[in-house]
Image 1 (spheres, one colour):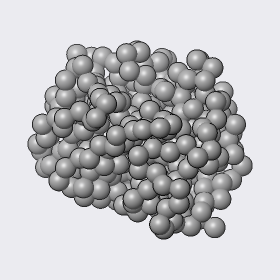
Image 2 (cartoon, one colour):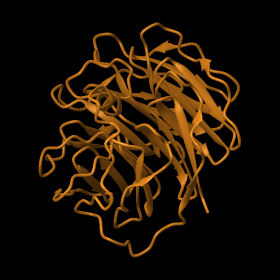
Image 3 (cartoon, rainbow, N blue to C red):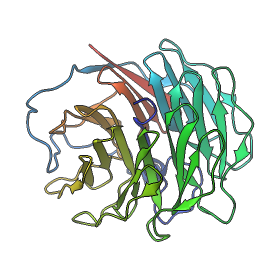
Length: 344
């Protein structure tokens, strides 16, 4: 389903949103971002060799789309159309061959565009830290519209997912806001102590959202589920991706991992060396790609096992990922560059 495979790193829990690409940037500031992931690092779902793997991705050289900023989010509707947004409120588009020049989609000072989701080449929605949204119609970006009152989500909007044209849901703090041509009133979903961090909508009537307390929520129709019990270690979940209504994967640092089968969530119990997956995007139930906020490493998932970390050629930490299928993924980096992976 278009528009639900996109992932972006959320902000650092307990730290006010500044528009930096969350964990990745926090680690940069902590001088830990370039620490390589150990070759062979594994978690509870990883084996030395997966039983079957999709075609390997060959990664392009890093392309400086908006150097000097942070590529906070990327979303690919098709193999010939992607959009990406930056900390500076700028947006770029990709036609399968080249990237456009950055344009100021959100010129409001201090607001960072932190998440974008594209349902088609003529419809994208991006949200910023100030509770404002901008949309793309295939030619240009709209003027920013305030959709989240100041009394809600004071920490900023964290994620948006569009299952179809003019059908989106955004999350901020403990609320979710639906868009169906116009923005609805915010609906309280979680607790203030467990802010919603990422959302993925595989259909107009189904979404999954995760919190930094490790609690997933599922939207069926107009009703959100009650919170699912914590994972085994109450770990952060920073990103979720649902290619279908019966399959979702959620990831986080320290090997945090949860999987949804359409009925219930299963949590991985980490052991051994910890793997830090800060963002995930699933092109199908048999292919997901996770990025690391510690290094320019990606890990793929074939439906049953995770691969070992491999480099995409970037020199800096990765912030976001979007996979159309197992044959095309786009990864954003903390220095404003992007890397495109194509199946060989």
